[in-house]
Length: 223
Image (tube, rainbow, N blue to C red; front, side, top):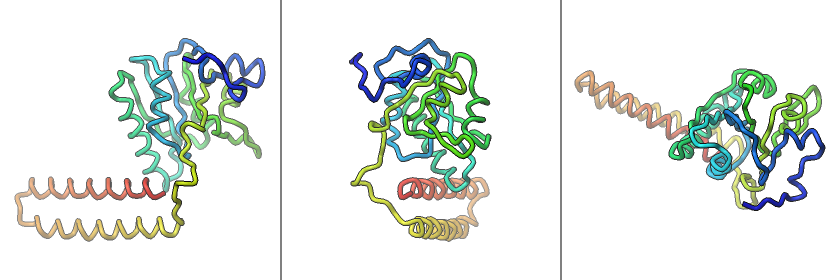
Protein backbone atom coordinates (compact mmCIF):
# COMPACT_ATOMS: atom_id res chain seq x y z
CA UNK A 1 0.00 0.00 0.00
CA UNK A 2 1.25 3.48 -0.86
CA UNK A 3 2.05 5.32 2.37
CA UNK A 4 2.51 8.74 0.72
CA UNK A 5 -0.35 11.14 1.40
CA UNK A 6 -1.44 13.62 -1.22
CA UNK A 7 -1.40 17.26 -0.19
CA UNK A 8 -5.21 17.40 -0.42
CA UNK A 9 -5.45 14.38 1.84
CA UNK A 10 -3.53 15.89 4.74
CA UNK A 11 -5.50 16.95 7.82
CA UNK A 12 -5.79 20.73 8.22
CA UNK A 13 -4.70 21.02 11.84
CA UNK A 14 -3.33 19.18 14.83
CA UNK A 15 -6.73 18.24 16.24
CA UNK A 16 -7.86 16.87 12.89
CA UNK A 17 -4.57 15.01 12.62
CA UNK A 18 -5.60 13.07 15.70
CA UNK A 19 -9.20 12.41 14.73
CA UNK A 20 -9.45 12.79 10.94
CA UNK A 21 -8.10 9.81 9.04
CA UNK A 22 -7.36 9.71 5.35
CA UNK A 23 -6.29 7.04 2.89
CA UNK A 24 -2.92 5.42 3.50
CA UNK A 25 -3.07 6.24 7.20
CA UNK A 26 -3.11 3.52 9.83
CA UNK A 27 -6.53 3.16 11.38
CA UNK A 28 -6.99 3.05 15.15
CA UNK A 29 -8.49 0.00 16.83
CA UNK A 30 -12.27 0.17 16.61
CA UNK A 31 -15.32 -1.92 17.41
CA UNK A 32 -17.70 -0.79 14.66
CA UNK A 33 -17.63 1.21 11.43
CA UNK A 34 -20.51 3.67 11.15
CA UNK A 35 -20.76 4.63 7.47
CA UNK A 36 -22.78 7.78 6.78
CA UNK A 37 -24.55 7.04 3.50
CA UNK A 38 -25.59 10.38 2.08
CA UNK A 39 -28.25 10.93 -0.56
CA UNK A 40 -25.64 11.87 -3.18
CA UNK A 41 -24.79 10.49 -6.59
CA UNK A 42 -22.16 7.82 -6.09
CA UNK A 43 -21.13 4.42 -7.39
CA UNK A 44 -22.21 1.93 -4.74
CA UNK A 45 -19.76 -0.88 -5.74
CA UNK A 46 -16.78 1.44 -5.35
CA UNK A 47 -18.05 2.72 -2.01
CA UNK A 48 -18.41 -0.91 -0.94
CA UNK A 49 -14.80 -1.54 -2.00
CA UNK A 50 -13.61 1.33 0.21
CA UNK A 51 -15.58 -0.05 3.14
CA UNK A 52 -14.20 -3.55 2.57
CA UNK A 53 -10.62 -2.22 2.56
CA UNK A 54 -10.92 -0.70 6.02
CA UNK A 55 -13.45 -3.06 7.61
CA UNK A 56 -11.94 -5.75 9.81
CA UNK A 57 -13.34 -9.25 9.19
CA UNK A 58 -16.22 -10.18 11.49
CA UNK A 59 -16.46 -6.60 12.76
CA UNK A 60 -19.77 -4.76 12.51
CA UNK A 61 -20.40 -2.20 9.78
CA UNK A 62 -23.43 0.05 10.20
CA UNK A 63 -24.75 1.72 7.05
CA UNK A 64 -26.54 4.79 8.38
CA UNK A 65 -28.80 6.95 6.22
CA UNK A 66 -31.39 9.62 6.85
CA UNK A 67 -34.97 8.46 6.29
CA UNK A 68 -36.84 11.74 6.65
CA UNK A 69 -37.63 12.41 2.98
CA UNK A 70 -40.51 10.09 2.02
CA UNK A 71 -40.04 10.73 -1.70
CA UNK A 72 -36.39 9.62 -1.61
CA UNK A 73 -36.95 6.78 0.84
CA UNK A 74 -37.29 3.94 -1.72
CA UNK A 75 -34.04 4.97 -3.43
CA UNK A 76 -32.21 5.20 -0.12
CA UNK A 77 -33.47 1.78 0.96
CA UNK A 78 -32.37 0.26 -2.34
CA UNK A 79 -28.94 1.86 -1.95
CA UNK A 80 -28.48 0.48 1.55
CA UNK A 81 -29.61 -2.99 0.50
CA UNK A 82 -27.33 -2.96 -2.55
CA UNK A 83 -24.24 -1.98 -0.54
CA UNK A 84 -25.13 -4.55 2.12
CA UNK A 85 -25.37 -7.29 -0.50
CA UNK A 86 -22.04 -6.29 -2.03
CA UNK A 87 -20.36 -6.71 1.38
CA UNK A 88 -22.26 -9.86 2.36
CA UNK A 89 -19.71 -12.32 0.99
CA UNK A 90 -16.66 -10.80 2.67
CA UNK A 91 -17.17 -11.96 6.27
CA UNK A 92 -18.29 -8.47 7.23
CA UNK A 93 -21.30 -8.13 9.52
CA UNK A 94 -23.34 -5.38 7.88
CA UNK A 95 -26.51 -3.83 9.24
CA UNK A 96 -28.53 -0.95 7.81
CA UNK A 97 -30.31 1.80 9.71
CA UNK A 98 -32.61 4.59 8.57
CA UNK A 99 -32.26 7.32 11.18
CA UNK A 100 -35.52 8.78 12.47
CA UNK A 101 -33.75 11.81 13.93
CA UNK A 102 -34.30 15.07 12.03
CA UNK A 103 -30.60 15.92 11.59
CA UNK A 104 -27.34 14.09 10.94
CA UNK A 105 -25.89 15.43 14.19
CA UNK A 106 -28.70 13.92 16.26
CA UNK A 107 -28.51 10.66 14.30
CA UNK A 108 -24.76 10.32 14.87
CA UNK A 109 -25.12 11.05 18.57
CA UNK A 110 -27.92 8.46 18.79
CA UNK A 111 -26.06 5.63 17.04
CA UNK A 112 -22.51 6.36 18.20
CA UNK A 113 -20.89 4.11 20.78
CA UNK A 114 -17.41 4.45 22.27
CA UNK A 115 -14.99 2.58 20.05
CA UNK A 116 -16.81 3.44 16.81
CA UNK A 117 -15.08 4.82 13.72
CA UNK A 118 -17.28 7.07 11.57
CA UNK A 119 -16.81 6.92 7.78
CA UNK A 120 -18.05 9.60 5.38
CA UNK A 121 -17.33 11.22 2.01
CA UNK A 122 -15.18 14.33 1.96
CA UNK A 123 -17.99 16.33 0.30
CA UNK A 124 -20.68 15.53 2.86
CA UNK A 125 -21.88 18.67 4.59
CA UNK A 126 -23.69 19.24 7.86
CA UNK A 127 -25.84 22.30 8.58
CA UNK A 128 -25.13 24.06 11.85
CA UNK A 129 -27.47 26.97 12.37
CA UNK A 130 -27.43 29.00 9.16
CA UNK A 131 -24.07 27.70 7.95
CA UNK A 132 -22.68 24.42 6.74
CA UNK A 133 -19.31 22.75 7.12
CA UNK A 134 -17.72 19.45 6.10
CA UNK A 135 -19.27 16.53 7.94
CA UNK A 136 -15.87 14.98 8.59
CA UNK A 137 -14.37 18.00 10.34
CA UNK A 138 -17.52 18.58 12.38
CA UNK A 139 -17.70 14.96 13.59
CA UNK A 140 -13.98 14.98 14.43
CA UNK A 141 -13.67 18.45 15.94
CA UNK A 142 -17.06 19.10 17.51
CA UNK A 143 -18.26 15.60 18.37
CA UNK A 144 -14.72 14.34 19.05
CA UNK A 145 -15.30 11.09 17.14
CA UNK A 146 -12.58 9.46 14.98
CA UNK A 147 -13.61 9.88 11.35
CA UNK A 148 -12.30 8.23 8.19
CA UNK A 149 -12.72 10.34 5.03
CA UNK A 150 -13.32 8.76 1.62
CA UNK A 151 -12.26 10.94 -1.35
CA UNK A 152 -15.27 11.56 -3.60
CA UNK A 153 -13.29 11.58 -6.84
CA UNK A 154 -13.29 7.78 -6.66
CA UNK A 155 -16.98 7.29 -5.89
CA UNK A 156 -18.69 10.20 -7.62
CA UNK A 157 -21.13 9.43 -10.38
CA UNK A 158 -21.22 13.02 -11.60
CA UNK A 159 -19.85 13.19 -15.13
CA UNK A 160 -20.67 14.65 -18.50
CA UNK A 161 -21.63 11.18 -19.67
CA UNK A 162 -24.44 10.84 -17.16
CA UNK A 163 -27.83 11.77 -18.54
CA UNK A 164 -30.24 13.59 -16.28
CA UNK A 165 -34.01 13.62 -16.62
CA UNK A 166 -36.45 16.46 -15.91
CA UNK A 167 -38.45 16.07 -12.72
CA UNK A 168 -41.77 16.15 -14.62
CA UNK A 169 -40.63 13.24 -16.80
CA UNK A 170 -39.53 11.22 -13.75
CA UNK A 171 -42.89 11.82 -12.07
CA UNK A 172 -44.80 10.97 -15.25
CA UNK A 173 -42.92 7.68 -15.67
CA UNK A 174 -43.47 6.70 -12.03
CA UNK A 175 -47.20 7.57 -12.15
CA UNK A 176 -47.61 5.67 -15.44
CA UNK A 177 -45.83 2.67 -13.89
CA UNK A 178 -48.14 2.78 -10.87
CA UNK A 179 -51.28 2.94 -13.04
CA UNK A 180 -50.02 0.16 -15.31
CA UNK A 181 -49.06 -1.95 -12.30
CA UNK A 182 -52.49 -1.48 -10.71
CA UNK A 183 -54.16 -2.50 -14.00
CA UNK A 184 -51.87 -5.55 -14.23
CA UNK A 185 -52.72 -6.60 -10.68
CA UNK A 186 -56.40 -6.28 -11.52
CA UNK A 187 -55.95 -8.58 -14.51
CA UNK A 188 -54.10 -11.13 -12.38
CA UNK A 189 -56.90 -10.93 -9.81
CA UNK A 190 -59.50 -11.73 -12.48
CA UNK A 191 -57.47 -14.57 -14.00
CA UNK A 192 -56.80 -16.26 -10.66
CA UNK A 193 -60.16 -15.61 -8.99
CA UNK A 194 -61.29 -19.20 -9.49
CA UNK A 195 -58.03 -20.75 -8.33
CA UNK A 196 -57.64 -22.39 -4.91
CA UNK A 197 -57.27 -19.76 -2.21
CA UNK A 198 -53.61 -20.51 -1.38
CA UNK A 199 -52.56 -20.46 -5.03
CA UNK A 200 -54.55 -17.25 -5.59
CA UNK A 201 -52.96 -15.28 -2.74
CA UNK A 202 -49.48 -16.64 -3.59
CA UNK A 203 -49.70 -15.44 -7.18
CA UNK A 204 -51.16 -12.08 -6.11
CA UNK A 205 -48.42 -11.60 -3.54
CA UNK A 206 -45.69 -12.47 -6.04
CA UNK A 207 -47.18 -10.14 -8.66
CA UNK A 208 -47.42 -7.28 -6.16
CA UNK A 209 -43.80 -7.79 -5.07
CA UNK A 210 -42.56 -7.86 -8.65
CA UNK A 211 -44.48 -4.68 -9.43
CA UNK A 212 -43.00 -2.84 -6.43
CA UNK A 213 -39.48 -4.02 -7.24
CA UNK A 214 -39.88 -2.86 -10.83
CA UNK A 215 -41.21 0.57 -9.88
CA UNK A 216 -38.57 1.16 -7.19
CA UNK A 217 -35.83 -0.03 -9.52
CA UNK A 218 -37.06 2.17 -12.33
CA UNK A 219 -37.26 5.19 -10.06
CA UNK A 220 -33.77 4.50 -8.71
CA UNK A 221 -32.38 4.26 -12.25
CA UNK A 222 -33.92 7.36 -13.79
CA UNK A 223 -33.77 9.71 -10.78
